[in-house]
Length: 325
Ligand code: XMP
Image (cartoon, rainbow, N blue to C red; front, side):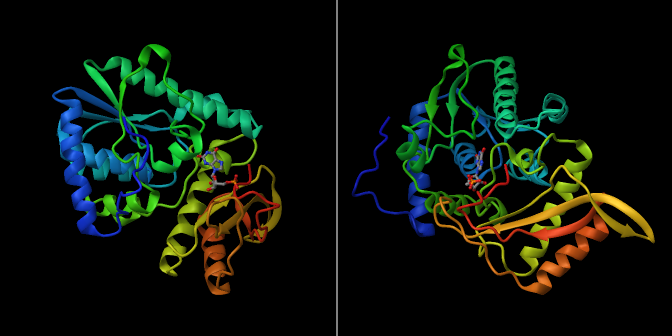
């Protein structure tokens, strides 16, 4: 498989160029796959979603998508995957809610790298178990993009996930492997995927797992997910989506005092993190309109159970990393 982008390859910047790319890839995919079946781990991220949409166009139900919900997705994300791929695109989608498996394994684990290892390892296990139940799969599709090839010797930096076991090796189908991220987005738009999916901000593989600090508990995870949804909604209302590179909430494993309904409360703080960056190696903190921050604060305090305080993180990278864990 050609893994070097030819110098003459035109950058895909317009819908017309995207259509041309899509037509070429449909032919290439059909030629490679024939009448065989292809398996894809569909996370709902930009790359795997675009690959899924391309393959659905090329080979329809010969593609089997597996979406593993590890219980650490943002609010509404798994639902969107089901809505877009199963309901709208009529894909062959297997949805696995593995929330309990992941949260049971993570119970009491507070070290960030240990949490990452558990999430990555369990993801592979769940995916592997599903793959073994299926018959006649010959190919594995992946959302490898060109920076993955440049930065990690062609191995999709699969969110700390590692790879499939040795006896589960398939021939790879990687139709967007020569594209840069902005080109993948143009192709995704031309394929009719919703803007919220195509322009999705970076979301780490371990998901909310590294934002629910320390040992994850279900109640704190719930508070984190609800607060994050409010932040995203209000940034959207304020026209900040797409202008701020990445934004999310964090819930530390500590409590702070407050007063609610005349009674002393002892609840969690929510930290808002928002950053601008070019390459994620360094980052600055944008100045967010005070009214927007206040509205988010008021909504989180009123709507999210167990939260009595909201903070805005002013730390640039370096020294602070973008994620808290
Ligand atoms: P940091 O926190 O290192 O983050 O400044 C830089 C970018 O990487 C994302 N990130 C991750 N992505 N798995 C991922 O797939 C991870 O374990 C992980 N940790 C951080 C982070 O969201 C930011 O965009």
